[in-house]
Image 1 (cartoon, rainbow, N blue to C red):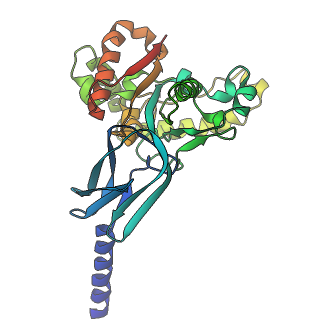
Image 2 (image 1 turned 90 degrees about the horizontal axis):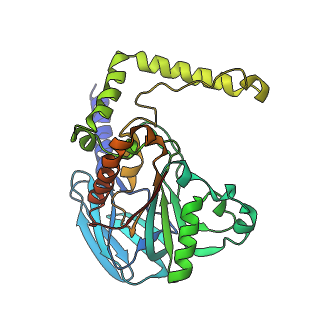
Image 3 (image 1 turned 180 degrees about the horizontal axis):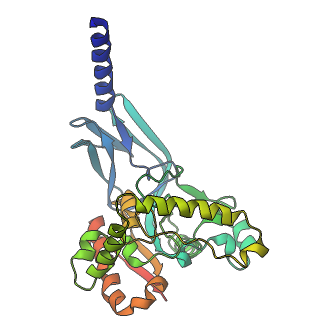
Length: 333
């Protein structure tokens, strides 16, 4: 019994040490990233409570202590340039990022028109073959539709003929033109998801704050509550099974069978609020020059409501980033 208790005690100590030694930099910080020029740039992540985190960049050092397992350091960047190295140190932990540039960073969001990849444009091959721009980079935010959804890791990509095909086409041409006009590095953070409504990119707090938006949440909540304790999971599992069967059919068979429809619920990316929590929040508050947005089609049935909701979303995004009224450029249908 003493031996067992001793083993348990040592195990608890080991777990405690591991918990106190946890350290991570937010996923969006990788090699090849672009940091916003002439700005107070936020760098953040996780670390043991009270531990010190130091960020080294271009001969400058900034330090901060972790509170509630979170840390954030603010760096002041200068004029556009690079490549540089950025280092983050926490006790015995050290992470180094290479090939870091300083320039202008834009977040590109919306639905399928922004998602539309360069490989699908007219004369795509001719454009892609010439897409060798070492100072243009992009980061595709992982498509995480619900909290436990497992998604592959991603990183900043340098624009080359090999990586350009998956660059969002609108954002690519925007970045190329800016890069040529300004002769500075350009970074694009891509978040669009085809078919999404504007309310998928807003918070529950915002939607519940206005009588014209509140019905969106109330309608969704009523659907979720109607399933009971395990009704949704049964429906969702049935949908997954039916979809797998449907995908096995050939093109001729699919002409006569409707594609299964995903039930509305916590795993459905069309739900209100969802993508704001699982995708957008992962890159807040990465310091930006501004936003690009191409959306509107999925809200056409509620145009009067959208007239208020879209500006409210713009205001919420600006508030979340805490950079004031930075540019929000948009195309809408």
